Image 1 (cartoon, helix red, strand yellow):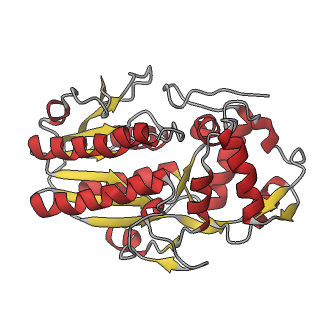
Image 2: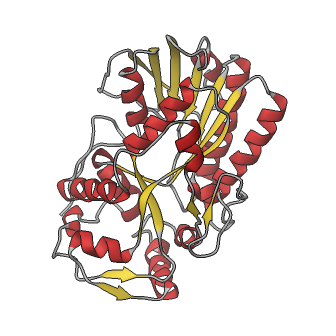
Image 3: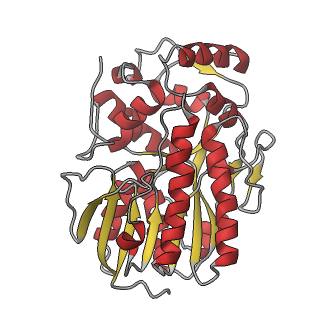
Length: 342
């Protein structure tokens, strides 16, 4: 066990999909003395033992070292998915902001840094290839999200060489879903005008079945449990996080009662690129390219060294998300506000 018992844990990006789950679990943990949540806007939500600071990691004037002073651990989750048409803007938040966090951890002498990496950091793999944490993390160069996640893996390599006294953990989760994040994810990836009720069984005319498109998913609360465990246990390095089974069009078709239609990746990408080009669709076609090339992850290390097991299957996580999508579900934080369209 590490020496974090009774200490203060700081969480960046504390009001988003992963952040709200991490903060809630930490606030319920008797081994945690207090939680400080960092977000651009203070939420109305106020769990036990939690205080808030309005901080933007992209702000060069933000006193991150001051926020981290006396902390037993920092869990870094802050991330911006948009605007996809302005990669310099996401770079400022995601890469430069993360490097500020790393530097502030060192300046404040925080002993533990848990960083949110991603399956998107991994280099492309052959179809159905299953990889452990030793697989290269060079991402897919065309997608800003993957470039940024991969760049931060290299930044952490340097940080660990220069600051061996800091215990660094890198979480590489699959796609994270929960009911409260449904509205946020619809806005980020599908656009504000996409009607959530379209996810209702029988309303979708068909689902595109794209060769090679098969991804892993995980309930956000299960990912948060891995973060909580990593704070307390004396572990270092990377951990893959995913639940079974892998999700493809056939599984989604069964869940939604919708027939699947085989479509070529080129046709789907062309349609996505056109919609993205006229700003009708916020999700970049470059991210679609990356998702097609993602390897599947072996999560043995998380199970053996963290003692971690997902409490819900990937199917249950996606079903909960779809239910939230239909209902316009959300939570009492600015990123997760529920909005039903249609």
